[in-house]
Length: 68
Image (tube, rainbow, N blue to C red; front, side, top):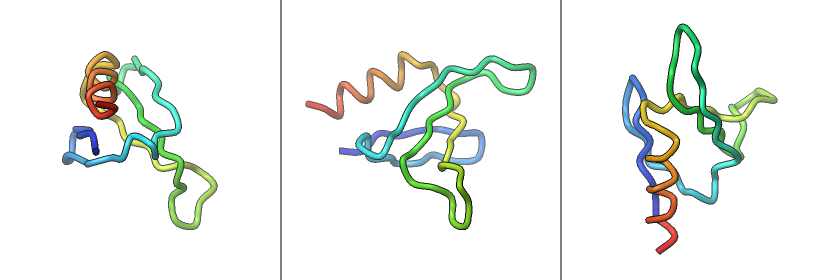
């Protein structure tokens, strides 16, 4: 099952098993949650990252629902 991650640009369907880690962010530019995936950007050493426009609790709820 996939979860939906909403960003400023669009929505992404992500397999929960591909998520490496999730961190809350509160800066002057962005407040929300960053979701890092296990896969790396093409030609880069850095992982794919989404800046989600939702709370950490909302993502955890979706992950719990995806487990069922």
